[in-house]
View 1 (spheres, rainbow, N blue to C red):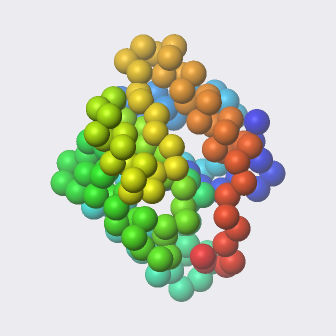
View 2: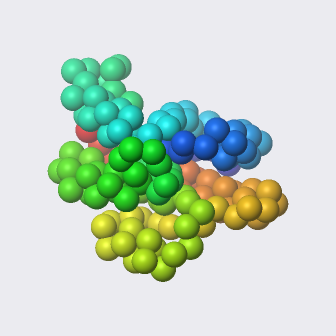
Length: 152
């Protein structure tokens, strides 16, 4: 299921339990993509800006996709989405919202701000696994991400 040249996945998720389950399912699918995690919106923005300013390719970790929770402490996922899609250097990175919110206002807001996908986290483990599998199959296996030069 893995690509020949796996690119990093950034998961912005404050819940240790949700991240651990996500990570287990991704590992079970033999995904070779390195996974980076930020627990807050502030840390995600800092991580991406630090990498955007890296001096060499060896220093840079530019994710090919961001899996973003909305309900984060501090700067929440909505603000992260807005900041990233307004940033000329980072706006091309696809962002898939992965949240418990099924509120139509959140869904509409995220798509209006440039989200590339919106997945609602199910409480049921079996359904959660199917959502993760669908995400992996499309975004990490089938989808072609923008190709960046050395550091972006």
